[in-house]
Length: 247
Image (cartoon, rainbow, N blue to C red; front, side, top):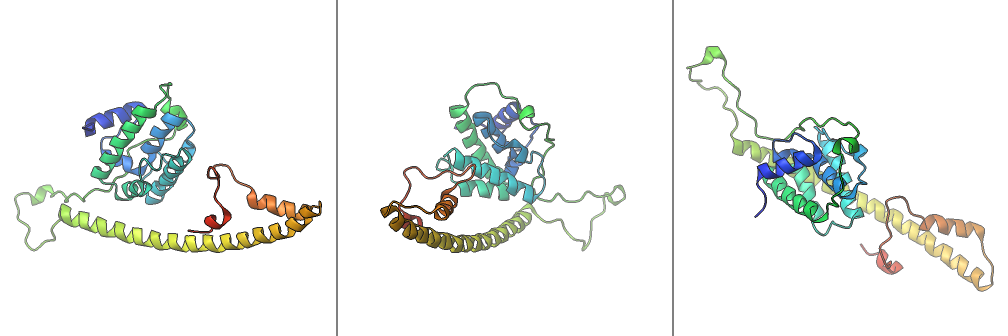
């Protein structure tokens, strides 16, 4: 059986020197990033918004978290779409499940070395992040005590607010899915162009190599095509060129 909410929050606050009072506050992604930093020690904490209060800041934290999972090859242990939903929905049940998983992962992988969370986040403020919660009904004024409102607007119920939030998130997911589809098409277009260039260069180099000759310009083009950037890893063993074109 997993730890309770209070036990998880106690562990998290003690490890990261935070003051979280609700599991939903983990939904900004900041705490998850720093828990993994306590394990690996190389998470770019300067890019993590510890006091994130806006959606774009949550998304930025998610991108850092996603990169950690990819770089450390732990994405198969916890499906990334689930993280994405955690960050957008900010619901207690989803974050509770993920925080329980994160605690088990930490127990299995923490190296046991001293960890200074404040130093790692370089003095970033960690005031309680905003959470999405049902709107509380407005309080009555002192002069209105004892009076029964007639025909006045009622505060929305928790179910109505939750439904409205769900509709909003679903619309955001549709928009982001459409945006992702456009990016994938653009990626495929430019990949095809680069692949054509690669084949052309190979066709030009092969007869030169057979004659014991070389072409400096073609070699430079080939060098650019095969170069990588920091954080990019070529899959182990590589894949045949024909398979790489399949998406």
